[in-house]
Amino acid sequence: MKMKDMRFTRKRHTARGFTLVELLLVLVILALIGGLVLPGIIGKAEGAKVKAAGSQINRLAMAVESFYLDTGTTPDSLSDLVGESSDVDGWNGPYVKSSSLKDPWGREYVYTYPGEHGDFDIYSLGADGQPGGEGKNADINSWE
Image (cartoon, rainbow, N blue to C red; front, side):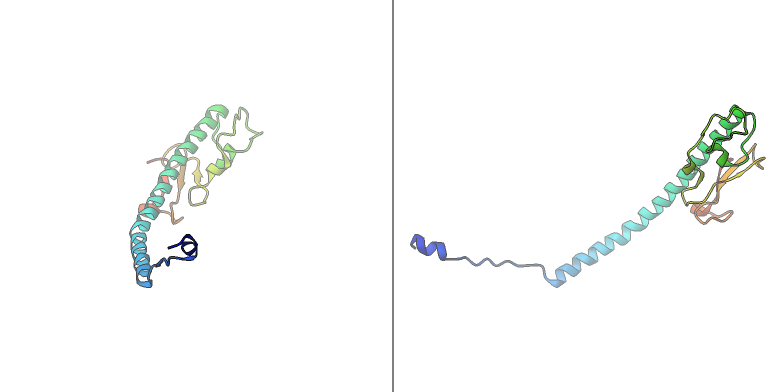
Protein backbone atom coordinates (compact mmCIF):
# COMPACT_ATOMS: atom_id res chain seq x y z
CA MET A 1 0.00 0.00 0.00
CA LYS A 2 1.22 3.41 -0.79
CA MET A 3 1.74 6.04 1.85
CA LYS A 4 -0.99 8.16 0.38
CA ASP A 5 -3.52 5.32 0.59
CA MET A 6 -2.60 4.52 4.19
CA ARG A 7 -3.28 8.02 5.27
CA PHE A 8 -6.88 7.93 4.16
CA THR A 9 -7.68 4.41 5.21
CA ARG A 10 -9.49 4.32 8.49
CA LYS A 11 -9.73 1.33 10.67
CA ARG A 12 -13.06 0.67 12.20
CA HIS A 13 -12.92 0.13 15.88
CA THR A 14 -15.73 -1.88 17.30
CA ALA A 15 -16.40 0.08 20.45
CA ARG A 16 -18.89 -1.70 22.61
CA GLY A 17 -20.77 -0.27 25.62
CA PHE A 18 -22.49 -2.00 28.49
CA THR A 19 -25.77 -3.70 27.87
CA LEU A 20 -28.88 -2.86 29.81
CA VAL A 21 -28.74 -6.19 31.63
CA GLU A 22 -25.16 -5.55 32.75
CA LEU A 23 -26.07 -2.09 34.05
CA LEU A 24 -29.09 -3.45 35.93
CA LEU A 25 -26.97 -6.20 37.47
CA VAL A 26 -24.47 -3.63 38.77
CA LEU A 27 -27.29 -1.52 40.21
CA VAL A 28 -28.79 -4.55 41.99
CA ILE A 29 -25.40 -5.44 43.49
CA LEU A 30 -24.87 -1.86 44.69
CA ALA A 31 -28.37 -1.78 46.23
CA LEU A 32 -27.70 -5.05 48.08
CA ILE A 33 -24.39 -3.78 49.43
CA GLY A 34 -26.02 -0.49 50.48
CA GLY A 35 -28.81 -2.37 52.21
CA LEU A 36 -26.31 -4.35 54.24
CA VAL A 37 -23.94 -1.51 55.12
CA LEU A 38 -26.24 1.46 55.84
CA PRO A 39 -28.08 -0.01 58.86
CA GLY A 40 -24.74 -0.71 60.54
CA ILE A 41 -23.52 2.83 59.92
CA ILE A 42 -26.74 4.38 61.21
CA GLY A 43 -26.61 2.21 64.35
CA LYS A 44 -23.04 3.27 65.06
CA ALA A 45 -23.99 6.94 64.65
CA GLU A 46 -26.66 6.62 67.35
CA GLY A 47 -24.19 4.85 69.64
CA ALA A 48 -21.73 7.69 69.09
CA LYS A 49 -24.40 10.23 70.08
CA VAL A 50 -25.04 8.36 73.34
CA LYS A 51 -21.30 8.37 74.14
CA ALA A 52 -21.01 12.05 73.21
CA ALA A 53 -23.90 12.91 75.53
CA GLY A 54 -22.20 11.05 78.39
CA SER A 55 -18.96 12.96 77.79
CA GLN A 56 -20.76 16.30 77.63
CA ILE A 57 -22.59 15.55 80.88
CA ASN A 58 -19.27 14.79 82.58
CA ARG A 59 -17.85 18.09 81.30
CA LEU A 60 -20.92 19.98 82.50
CA ALA A 61 -20.65 18.33 85.93
CA MET A 62 -17.01 19.41 86.19
CA ALA A 63 -18.00 22.93 85.14
CA VAL A 64 -20.68 23.05 87.87
CA GLU A 65 -18.08 21.95 90.41
CA SER A 66 -15.63 24.60 89.16
CA PHE A 67 -18.37 27.22 89.42
CA TYR A 68 -18.99 26.10 93.00
CA LEU A 69 -15.27 26.21 93.89
CA ASP A 70 -14.96 29.74 92.46
CA THR A 71 -18.15 31.22 93.84
CA GLY A 72 -19.15 29.09 96.83
CA THR A 73 -22.61 28.57 95.32
CA THR A 74 -24.07 26.30 92.68
CA PRO A 75 -25.43 27.77 89.46
CA ASP A 76 -29.18 28.29 89.19
CA SER A 77 -29.09 26.93 85.65
CA LEU A 78 -26.52 25.57 83.21
CA SER A 79 -26.66 28.86 81.28
CA ASP A 80 -24.94 30.47 84.31
CA LEU A 81 -21.84 28.52 83.27
CA VAL A 82 -21.69 30.38 79.94
CA GLY A 83 -22.58 34.02 80.46
CA GLU A 84 -20.87 36.29 82.92
CA SER A 85 -22.75 36.23 86.20
CA SER A 86 -22.10 39.71 87.46
CA ASP A 87 -24.21 39.13 90.56
CA VAL A 88 -22.06 36.18 91.75
CA ASP A 89 -18.80 37.03 93.48
CA GLY A 90 -15.81 35.02 92.32
CA TRP A 91 -17.29 34.05 88.94
CA ASN A 92 -14.33 33.06 86.76
CA GLY A 93 -15.99 31.75 83.60
CA PRO A 94 -17.12 31.04 81.07
CA TYR A 95 -16.87 27.45 82.25
CA VAL A 96 -18.29 25.89 79.07
CA LYS A 97 -19.28 26.96 75.56
CA SER A 98 -22.95 27.62 74.90
CA SER A 99 -22.96 24.78 72.34
CA SER A 100 -22.26 22.37 75.22
CA LEU A 101 -25.65 23.08 76.77
CA LYS A 102 -27.51 21.02 74.15
CA ASP A 103 -27.35 17.25 73.79
CA PRO A 104 -26.47 15.57 70.47
CA TRP A 105 -30.19 15.47 69.59
CA GLY A 106 -30.48 19.27 69.90
CA ARG A 107 -32.32 19.43 73.24
CA GLU A 108 -31.08 21.19 76.35
CA TYR A 109 -29.67 19.10 79.17
CA VAL A 110 -31.81 18.93 82.28
CA TYR A 111 -30.15 20.35 85.41
CA THR A 112 -31.67 20.09 88.88
CA TYR A 113 -30.30 21.48 92.13
CA PRO A 114 -30.55 20.04 94.66
CA GLY A 115 -30.39 16.71 92.91
CA GLU A 116 -32.14 13.49 93.83
CA HIS A 117 -29.03 11.39 93.18
CA GLY A 118 -26.28 13.76 94.28
CA ASP A 119 -25.63 17.41 95.02
CA PHE A 120 -26.99 18.17 91.55
CA ASP A 121 -28.30 16.10 88.64
CA ILE A 122 -27.59 16.60 84.94
CA TYR A 123 -29.21 14.38 82.33
CA SER A 124 -30.37 14.04 78.75
CA LEU A 125 -33.63 12.37 77.79
CA GLY A 126 -31.92 10.39 75.02
CA ALA A 127 -32.86 10.06 71.37
CA ASP A 128 -36.63 10.02 71.92
CA GLY A 129 -36.73 13.03 74.28
CA GLN A 130 -38.96 11.13 76.72
CA PRO A 131 -38.15 10.05 80.30
CA GLY A 132 -36.96 6.45 80.61
CA GLY A 133 -36.45 4.28 77.58
CA GLU A 134 -34.00 1.59 76.55
CA GLY A 135 -31.02 1.47 74.23
CA LYS A 136 -30.55 4.69 72.27
CA ASN A 137 -33.73 6.07 73.87
CA ALA A 138 -32.44 5.59 77.43
CA ASP A 139 -31.73 8.64 79.56
CA ILE A 140 -28.05 9.54 79.97
CA ASN A 141 -27.22 11.01 83.38
CA SER A 142 -24.50 12.25 85.69
CA TRP A 143 -25.07 9.78 88.54
CA GLU A 144 -24.49 6.42 86.85
